[in-house]
Image 1 (cartoon, one colour):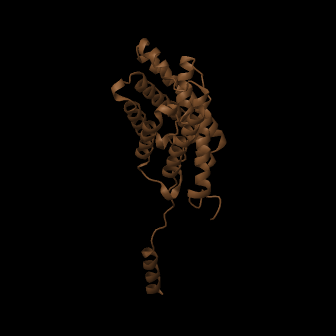
Image 2 (cartoon, rainbow, N blue to C red):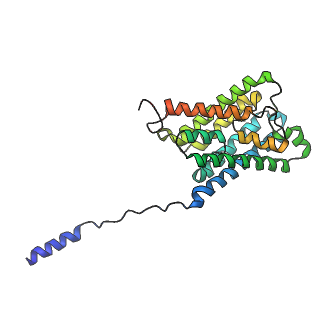
Image 3 (cartoon, rainbow, N blue to C red):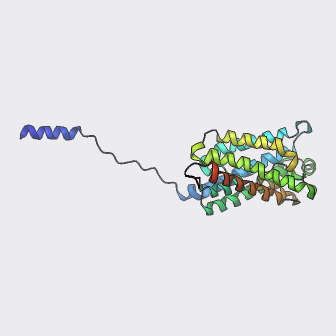
Length: 258
């Protein structure tokens, strides 16, 4: 019996120790609610600020290249640094599409859009403070003045829908769709902004972002054809969300043919 007890004791000592799973600390209310909203304000205001300044201070020799590079690189940097805080939307159509693809709840989507519009107004105001008055006036405050007549509307709306669809599709595939997620997301989104501005800048101004149009419109009081920069981008985001939900998404996102 003694030997048996010793053997039993030895075998019990040989058993691996059971450890309790380590639970990750849950984010507090500030990190869940307030911090993401503040990040959307800060990210959008700097994007709109830099974007407006690039248009106001654009030299004729650079053409569309300067605004295209500035907008694209600004997006890439801001998406990279803010991604883990808010998801780096900075654009109402992105928020709408991500909500439709199940990436966030309705309340947060609404708060994000409000914060993006606030950021757009503050960013446009910062651009006005920074630039000389004569250059600001000549650029019409970096507002969208390309549309002069109703005859341009169909092309401009189609351009905003198609180009916003492209960039929103890229956002959904590189950041939401599990099958195609990639750490190259900031680079790819920034490149898409650049190619869109280079391709369609003379057609509609390549806004693709109601917050980017809303801020300058408030600061300058210029609202002519402003609705185009809501209808076009939102329409493009709906098309992109439909493409992901019906055709391109993985099993979690796709609604049919599972």
